[in-house]
Amino acid sequence: MAAAFKEVWPEQGVDDEDTKPKMMVPLRKSNFVLLTEGSGLTLKPDKNRLLEVKEVKNNVGPTVSNMAATALSQRDDPTQNFIGEFITDISAPVVYGALASNARLFKVKGNRSGLTSIEASGRGIKAELVVTVHPEKLVKVAFHFAATLDGSNKIQPLTRWNPSDTSQWIIDLNHMFTPQANVVFEKIHADYWVPQMKDSKEKKDPTKPFSLAEWDTIDVKRHPKANLNVFLVGKWIGNGSDPLGSHIIKTKDVVCDDTTDHGSILKLLSHEIGHFLGAGHPPVGKRHWITEMSFARIGNKIPHDFVLLFNPW
Image 1 (cartoon, helix red, strand yellow):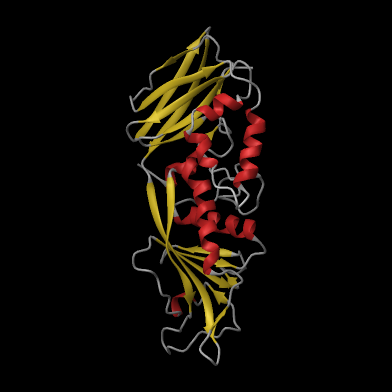
Image 2 (image 1 turned 30 degrees about the horizontal axis):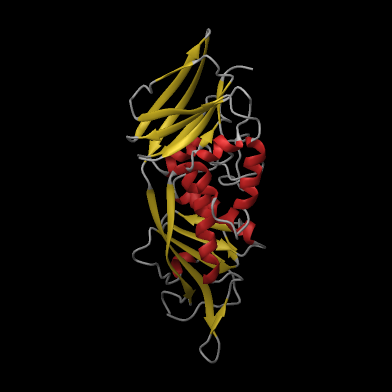
């Protein structure tokens, strides 16, 4: 097997599925990467002097795959909220080991934003890792839950979701986007919204689904301090079909249909937020559920090419 840079944990900022492995490093913080079959190779300084690279350990043990599986299962458990500790605590990869007995573990710190690469060479072989360093990108999010009023002027939700769900959504979105793209979401608003029609100021007919065709005719109340407004509307009809949700480019709104469970709403939110951050759909064969709604790949993977769209420096 040839020497190669590999991820330590899935979905934590190293994309080794591409033809050339790539890595996202947060500015003034660190990420970790493995060099497999790298015994005797010399690591050269990065080409553009953006990084501080330190070898944490060589010849580490064989159990990181078990650690990664455990970490991912804990991340998917809403009662757990410590996956980030694994990537910031040097002791974790040392204690739990790595993929191969001759793998070398490196800690990579980003000192300046930009694009660079690191190379390990020797014995007539070479391994290269493309590295991009990204500052933190903060996205302030406002959640709006469609509702109507009953005869007593009490809120009657039009969606199965409610404002109390949003705290866990923010946690899970940050578990996906922060380690892979250094994008951080902050909730600044979550409340019910009673939509009215722009022209008549009458309440929208609650028996009819929301649709992309009529969105411009609704008096949509966006939060003035939010970078992103997310609308949970119960039933949504998009462009000629029901795609479950839409990112409306003109207004930068994300609108979501109801879904069946927590996992499915996170898939929908992450997909539409990916569009909001600048991504289209990937080509066939490069599908990841965070950016492609036909879930050909299981997991939360953000391909590195999309990181450059989500959070350019």
